[in-house]
Length: 84
Ligand SMILES: [Zn+2]
Image (cartoon, rainbow, N blue to C red):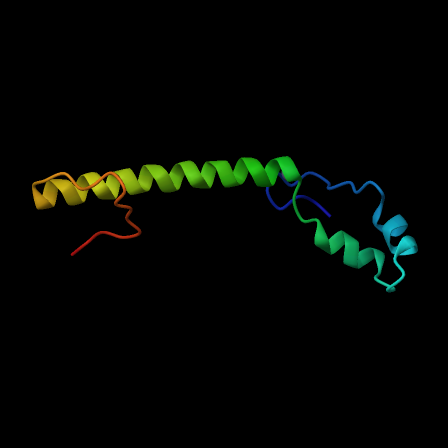
């Protein structure tokens, strides 16, 4: 199967067939293929991007809230949404 992030093939080592052959519980090659839907590096890079976006979004929301409130909020204050 292809990586759901970069769309390039995910190549398993050992292969899905080799893993299935060694599996005493009878899990199929398809099972092993279904377990690995992304490259590890792609998953880590995606998580980093999403985290950066979340931090930037929080900074935007916090700045907007501070402008609305007219004072600075504590550095530990984190937003998941804009206060009313
Ligand atoms: Zn990938």
